[in-house]
Image 1 (cartoon, helix red, strand yellow):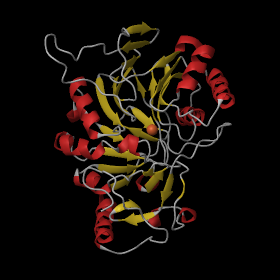
Image 2: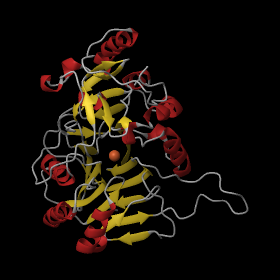
Image 3: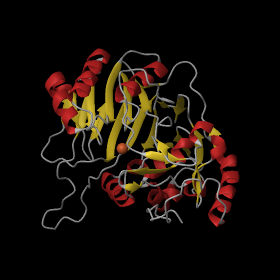
Image 4: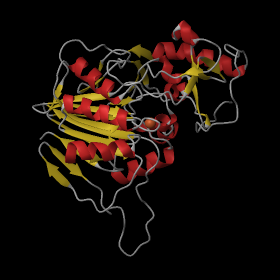
Length: 382
Ligand SMILES: [Fe+2]
């Protein structure tokens, strides 16, 4: 097996030229394909106006850092609810504490016309942290109306199998699970070695409805995904991982669903064509773009959301911006200038943004740049 049920990486590495190799794993993968065909849908492409919500709360369930001693703060159109020591009990040693890790998971709760929708975007790096933080933050999976995976990196889906094991039975039946395309399932490696692959069987076993959203699509009536993120700015995104097309021990992406040019039989640079961002249009405020990891470029991501929504007004950008080394100050300053042009009210930096970007953006843009942390809840509108 490439991975066991907990999605842990083994030492196995698909060899070049092993595409389509037989074996028990491949047989089970073929069966999975047939099942996937029945339960995989093309997401409904966004046509016309995107929906408006009156209120949106984004809770950082998994993020890289934990903050203390930062009070809750009210801004124009935004309340930043910080978690400050509320998970400790007097006279008892701490046992349940919010954990930070390299990863991202966000819970978005939106309200419009008297109705509420809940979406989980990404699953963090480990199930232990995701489940721990969900329990402390009282995130109720039975309320979820949709799940979204931004891209096929382990720090975004690593907690998924454990989440489905723990909470799969509580989820709404056939709940939609959005991804940007088949690429999301490819096996990847990064400079550290095996970087895992999304577990298609776990998704099917949990009876989720797999939604392929290569184009902008409505999510849970209130949100929309960007679809494929165009390369329209100066940005030249890093390619920190490699991917291989094919099925290996039941994991991977199906060659017949991938572009022929990528089906080379060996690892190729990951272009993140499958990456998507989830966004909301908040009434009288503008777009709130949840970037996740911005491998296609954070400016490209925001501009893609603006195009999809047909609006120039961006209220907030929240998530990982991925402006990290070896990208240097020139690149960072160009990104900041692009943000000046877009003129969002708030930039909320999380996960993979990069400390240097945060420092320079604070200098240039002041306190509209806000640090995220585990447990923080950002409430937009009303
Ligand atoms: Fe990431």
